[in-house]
Image (tube, rainbow, N blue to C red; front, side, top):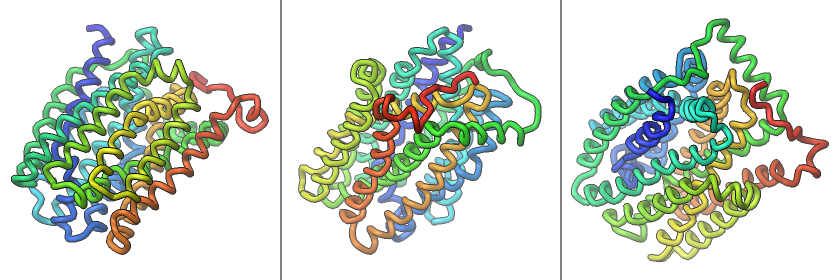
Length: 399
């Protein structure tokens, strides 16, 4: 079996992993069970805290025993987590589900992109990593778009039905993970685990460009992901529950197209124009939509997803070029560890602000904060001749 089959399998794995009919109504379901937006958002915080706890061990596991089995373990944990969400009924059941979802995410983070990077390298197409990453990642968004409509329609009948239906795609993702091929570029490693981790930390300390990119990614993820998950609470103020999925569908389809064409677009226009310019325009659109707060706002907010895929691929490629081959998954997990902690804190605070000052005020505040990571990306990506004295332009891949 040829290693190239991993590309298609990873695309389908991404599809089933994010085929989540409950996604559009998750915060509504969690808030209904727990009794408040703060406690509802605390479930997302628990996911990220659990991911943070398991992050580094699973990253080391990937580098040392294999990409494929790490994905298999993650898919199994995702099935268990979704079952507990579906059982629901109590806050404790949701917390248990969140812990297993966090465990699954920790297996995936760092590992899945490392699997793709190792695969395309073994195929002799390392230079096309951006294009492959964009196309496989587009499957996340296609899945979210389709499942958003299905989930919101079912939610008009029963939230619980939506949760149980969401277990099925998790099982399918587990089946796909079993068919992956371990890249020969990666082999199980022996030696001291602490030494392996120390080398990864050392790489961060000695690479200032990687440090800045990592900080920007961490802040961007924490603010952006929490705001996205909470957006359904804003849409519910303006549209009926059954229509929430329509806004999500438009947003996810735009993101899917953006992911699919990310590689060629980045080659044509460059990272600075698309990443920095696109992020600024996207946040301006969000602020206008929130301040207008009328029936057109959800549709307008959905349109800015056209920048999401390109920006995500650009961010992923930038850090992958700075990671070392030996600690690639571990370093990705360290970044994800910090992002998970930042998300856990920010998401709970976002819910608490919404309980105190309202949904719109909370989302406006989070959008303004999003300009901080944008400024960091602008600094890192400014013309090389202006930054040679401060940031080493040499990529460290393979060192």
